[in-house]
Amino acid sequence: MSDPVASVAKAPFVHLHAHSMYSLLDALGDPMDIVARAKELGYDAIALTDHAALYGAIEFYEAATKAGIKPILGVEANIAPGSMTDKTPRVGDRVFHLTLLAETNEGWSNLLKLVSVSFLEGFYYRARMDKDALRIHAKGLIALSGCLKGEIPKAIASSDMERAEALIVEYRDIFGPDNFFLELVHHPESSTQIMVNEGLVELSKKTGAPLVATKDVHYLHVDDAEAQDALQCIHDGKLLLETNRFSILGTDHAMSSPETMAEAFVAHPDAIANTRVIADRCQVTLELGKSFLPQFEVPEDETEMSYLRRLAQDGLKERYGEPSTEALERLEFELSVIERMGFPGYFLIVQDYVNWAKDHDVIVGPGRGSGAGSIVAYSLKITNLDPLHYGLLFERFLNPDRISMPDFDLDFDDVKRKDVIDYVSAKYGVDRVAGIITFGTMAARAAIRDVGRVMGLTFQEVDRVAKVVPPPVQGKHIPLATSSKESVELRALYESDARVHQLIDLAIKLEGTARHASQHACGIVIAPKTLVEYAPLQKAQGGDVE
Image (cartoon, rainbow, N blue to C red; front, top):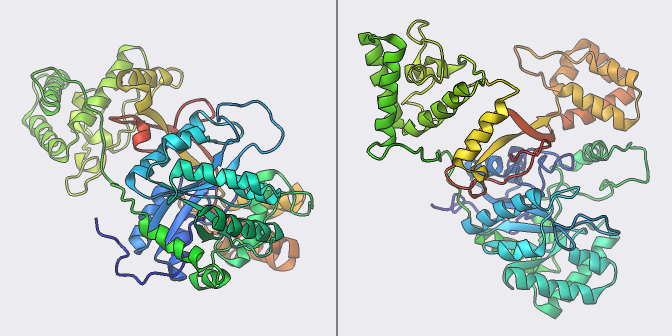
């Protein structure tokens, strides 16, 4: 695959440490916003390194590629001070931060595994991995020493240069001397960061570990700082007026231009140059839009397609007795489309667990959505609605002119739904079946209530504003930035009360931000190989893997 940014002028500096809203309640801007801002500032490449997870990685990859910017996929990992499986209470640091970037496709695969193991095995208050896991999955990764919460920066900040040097040796041994960089973070407002940077420069000379310049980006524009601070308070359950709380308000965490960053590190041109070196080395290409289905086990003398055809023809006779010419022609048409689009296995998989459910007294709905338009599905008893009788169109479900994965909307008895999932897990493997993650975002009223709470406003004060936010129109929310101008009541409050003015201004910046992760109420993924080969995994609150 050719480099999508080969023809674009290369910036002298590349951001290798940046967060999106998927660093939940810690950063602002979705991946598309980050890409748009990077393009506006003249970047040809940028990394996304959200806290502990890869929630926004695919969205970021697609947006960056479309914009002609090289996406560098990474994570700001939490490193356990000992074994990640040790979950006994301890005094001191629970985790250290480490910036990990995927250099190659193998590195991306290892990143999926590391993030998964940190959630599935190392979770203790937060997802954690340890150095044993890093050693196993280090290939294809580039590591940076991290922000002030990194293990090496913390040692330097504690004036323990001997320990910092030993840690550099250890991390270089884990990743290889060419794949571990000492991270000079640009936050000149922080005296601690200045001290740490000076220590890193000294240790670079002593150990030979290369330097790299970064900025810990948590929002896109300088005037987003107060909104990020409010977001942090929402996360921590604090008030903005509290003084004894964590805040990054005193330091600039906005995305800076490449020229600004190059000027900031004029004394360390090698640290700037290494951002370019790393960006050029990172060459991850993802195969998106391709379906990966497990192989359905069929009789020895059958293919998936021949077996599907036989089951469908038998089912058609069972449904109609002597099928009409219309039914036979419709069945053959649908089967030809299913074969041409490569989905016979999908129909076999679905009919298998649907009929298992019916055979085991699990109530199954008659079918809804576009899948009810398939006579093949009706013949296989996936659905229980006759598409010919009701004039339903198959093309709404599968259209040969629009290649996309079919999706049956199926309803199972809530009480026994887990029995069906257990059956599927037993048939295909527990490591190949999982729920789907979803994210709750702040709608306008929720953003107002959250911001009002951290501002210390009373319930009545906040409720007065929230109640005049216009309701959705035809199911679509009106952006708060629009309604605050067009709604007479909301605009009156906005213009007459300074606190409401601040409340709405902050809520506008937070509206649409991801607030929490949860498990999709219905969706289940079945993969042909262990799921960690395709996506990172974590446990939902109920204990299920998603």
